[in-house]
Structures are given as C-alpha cells and as structure tokens.
Length: 222
Image (cartoon, rainbow, N blue to C red; front, side):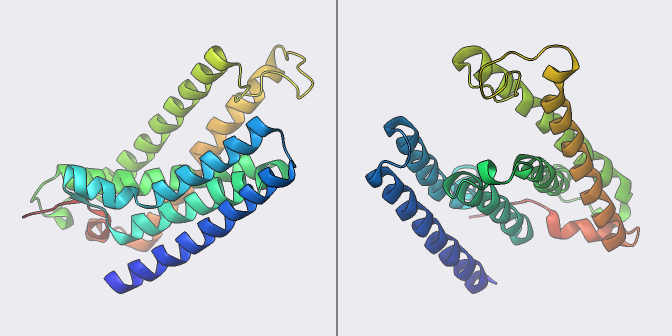
C-alpha cells in the first residue's frame, strides 16, 4: 500500500512540476501582467506544498489519514489548483468553479466520516448506526461550505476580490437576487456534493456501519 501511495505522490509531483514550468513560461513571455503571473506561480508552489499536507498533519498532530481520503484529496488538488488555476480551466470553462464546489464537499464528507470514527476512540464502529456517520459527514461538509463563504466575504470586504461575484467583470455592481446567485449557487452545489457522497456511502455500506472503519482517522502510536 505504501508503494502505491509513493507512486501516486510521485506522479502528482511530476504533474505539478509541469504546471509550474508552464506558469513560469507564461510569466517569461509576458502573457499576463507581472502581478497576475507571480500569483499563478505562487499558487502553483502552494499546491506543491499542499501535496504533502497529509504527511504534515501526521508529523504535527500524529494523525494518520486513510489513503482513500488522501487520494480523494489529491484528486481535488489536481482539478482545483493545477487544472483550475495553473492551467486556467476555471477561466476557460465557465462552470469549472461549480465542479469544484461539488467535489470539495465530497472530500469533506469523507473527512467527516473519518473524524467521527476518530472521536469514537476504541469503540466498535460496527455496533453503531451508519446514520451517525452519514449525518455527521453531511453536516461537517455543510458547515465547511458556510465558513468558506465567510472567507470569500472577508476577502471581498478587505481586498475587493469579487469572489462572491457581486459585480460583473466590468465592475458594475449587481443588486437584488443577481448579487446572491453566485453565493447561493455555491451553497447549493456544496449541498448536492455532500448528498451524493452520502448516497454513495450508503450504497457501499449496505446499511452496515462497519464500512466506515476504512475512513477512520487513527492516532499514530510511537
């Protein structure tokens, strides 16, 4: 299993290096403004660091994330940071942002399953109801989605980044329902993603809580 983990990580690092080289090339030929070019490079470098986030969490908090969650997280990293930002899919494909808002809650729902398993300590998961995991995972993803909108609101307030799309690309302020559409759309897709992950887990578990053992976060013992 560890060799598979290393192979996936190596492949992801190679892809990240290609994306970084492409962003540096764009910066060199002046495809974007100097500021924008630097931002693309910094975000790609941040993505490289985030590849190692599961290992950083293990080092700092002595928590081991199941490989199933790690691989799902890496998939989201690919479509958000490397494809979405570095290769500009988020600008090329209009609904790419909504894809991200659908996939991210799936990852968070899976993480919610892992957290409730961790909080149960040494308890036998098979003796609990699968709905404990399904409801907690759904709620965890939903709360994270709300806090993300808080973050976007803060960025828009402090830096006028228009993350919540309250203005057009030309700078014209939207009013009424038009100003709410992006935020409500994000919350809707977040909810749909969490529901889909819950349905998938319910089908896979066949109504048995023992299935969620494979999501369980575990404490690293010395």
